[in-house]
Image (tube, rainbow, N blue to C red; front, side):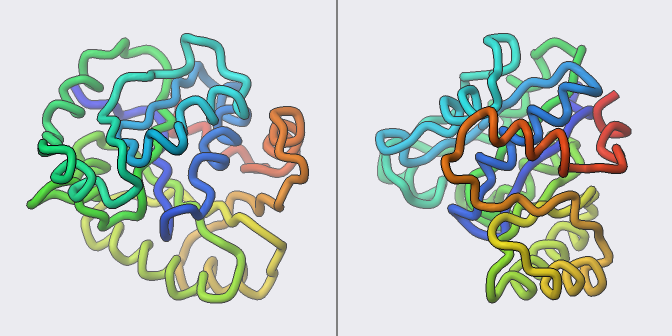
Amino acid sequence: MKPSKGLFVTGTDTNVGKTVVSAALMHRCRIDAAVRYWKPIQTGIEESDDTVDVARLGTCDTSEVVRWGVRLPLPVSPHLAARLNGNTIDMRTLVEFAARQPADGAWIVEGAGGVLVPINETETMADLIAALNLPVVVAARTSLGTINHTLLTLEALRGRGLHVTGVIMVGDANPDNREAIERYGRTRVLGELPWLTPLTPAALSEWALSSLDRDGRLSEHLR
């Protein structure tokens, strides 16, 4: 049995804000359903731990965080991080683990890197999204270059038959870029997450509850 309720958070690039977006989604989505966060693959674990960050920023209790996954020391692409660590990532192991989890509630799954980052010699992050059978939220920058990167990401997802539920933009507000992404990407921007200084759980919660997915369309993917 594959997960079917929830969202997969991918990005147009690395360090685009997927982890903060995932934490914001935890705040927003737990209004509609019981949610659990999972990062199946984490590279650079010696420098940062996205699961710890989401648990803190999303004010998650222990039942809302799945801590098991592939954890690799070097901050490089998953396939390379695994190779340099002397092993190979087996996507089937990740999918089988997910299938064994309780069927109640919904998932917020965070990917590593972008859609086409390699997991191993033959599979990419897009293959994992498809195997987990989850609709996708794309985290994108608001700054220069985001139109091209976002449209390419949307095209790659749709070309593989994956469902895109929307985009969350991160950074200083840019109405022109938002309009272009919605128009040419044939999608909707679920929210524009500004730089929060300081970035605290309270500040992120306030933004998520007031400005993220105001029309409540994500709820259909959570129940």
